Image (cartoon, rainbow, N blue to C red; front, side):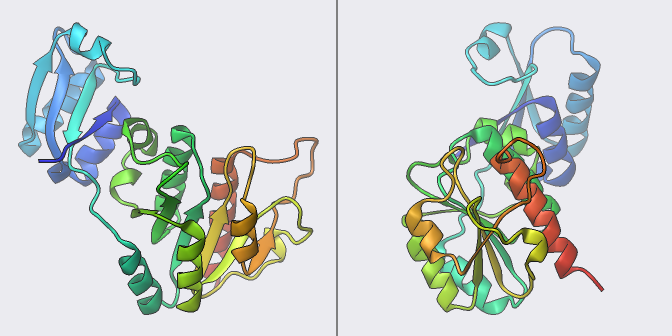
Length: 244
């Protein structure tokens, strides 16, 4: 049986609330529990989730910020490139988010939270040179890793091209364009491409976009963190898509 790991009180609280069936086992540190740990234990037991206790030495081996709790959880369900193609073909108002080699797990976790909050249908990442779904990503995502489809593809540009042929209009965020997201009309089948930390969009990825847009910057800072920029853009897209 394949098992993933989730750390931290808040992330496990969220998963217990929304998808307790995905938790195989809750593990807590031995000894007197603090109030939040005790609440987790009570919730897990009430839901019939298996629990066990481990000594401090067990948790000391972990690099993650665990807060004395961890959970063994089911891996995210597989979602393939063919599933992506079917999604675009069948959904006239879908929203696909592409991440071009984002490597910081904290950024990916935060992006998944924004994707969950704004109704993104799938997040697509390249298999190479990109952070995948690990314990840190799950913790930062606070449950969104279990609700947002994350698809790892062999060739990001090829996947974008394939989905464009199915009717997806692909917009890339890049600093070198004068057109801002507030001057852009978002509707229909839409793909948003975000670049890596520091380097932004790769040249080939940029060339494959149907349109490039930028977030207006009024201060001295040249750009936003990729997770912040993603959140800003996703909320503008949804504001337009849901406008009456």
